[in-house]
Length: 122
Image (cartoon, rainbow, N blue to C red; front, side, top):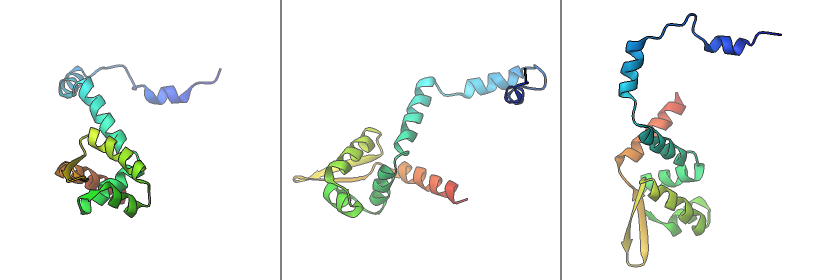
């Protein structure tokens, strides 16, 4: 039976656990719930329409009608994506009469996108 070289690559040369390193890393690991929340946040960035909306809101606070016009999409599609962005606390809104204006929730959103753009531009 042929050897499975992939499983050999994954193993250490010899079995020796560096308990001090493992313990230090384990102490610094965030709780499972926090890691789950972080993974969910990054899933939001996995949709190019949501990224476009965030970039639009980089430039200006806008209503659904204006975002839809700018991106060539339906208001319904934009509203659906804005709902996800609001639930993830990436955008905020304010009412002015019957119109709702959306903007980035805070500077962290811009930083996340700037860091991502910098990373893919390297």
